[in-house]
Image (cartoon, rainbow, N blue to C red; front, side, top):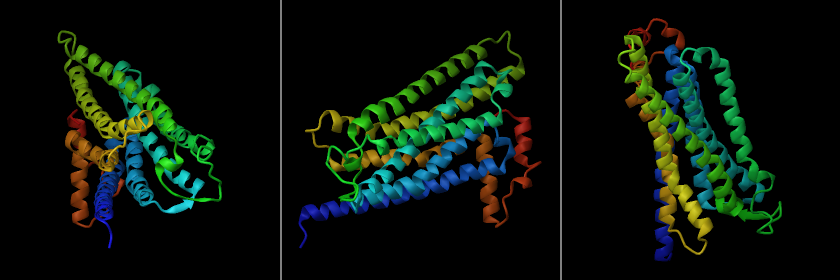
Length: 328
């Protein structure tokens, strides 16, 4: 008979896997709808939504790759060191792509507010695609750092051929997670985002307060930008709230190695980091009018079993509404 401690652990593992599967399904379905909405509605195909699609692709990867890998790694299967290291590094790559996509969105909105007359000349669609590619390249480079030596192989005297029980902390060093992954790859971009959004809100408020100089079109433009900036800033805020717990746990584990962190606390930190990928589509749907209208049309077409092609919408009600209103 198994001991009560083993039964409790098995129960916790079952609960963990069940919640992870639910988060994965929600993340994939929600973010596939984000990509589909941009594909269907031509009015959403601007530079900002190029970065939003990049973020959605990263969130789809969280649901389809990161969460299954996290489940597999939590089960502690036996494999070679570098196989486990590659699987763990994929988690880091996809996480970093989300952060850099959020930073690209913040920079894009900042430029739109600071240089509205020159914005379309400087931030072209081609340059936006290049920026998306650069985000993913930098993500791969930062996530592959453990593969080129900053890992636990030498400290644990492990050979390339010897099998290990694959756990994240077995192959990834905590000094890398704290000093490089957290302080450099997370804190620095998030600090820049906070500064950029602070400046965006300051400039918009300043422009809206100039009632005497403001034309009706100018005021409408800045009110539209203010609403979109609030929505995107909410995405950043949710990212911070969801990812800080697991990074704080890593810092405690590194700086206070003798303190044993409860396993349920680690699970909660992992859950929150993963659930962030399912929250972003909800923000878009509730806060952005064009996006919400597109989702409604997609849902109706799916229920009626009709094809949802981009060419169907050259004069759709969505684009007609976009020409008549500045509300997102």
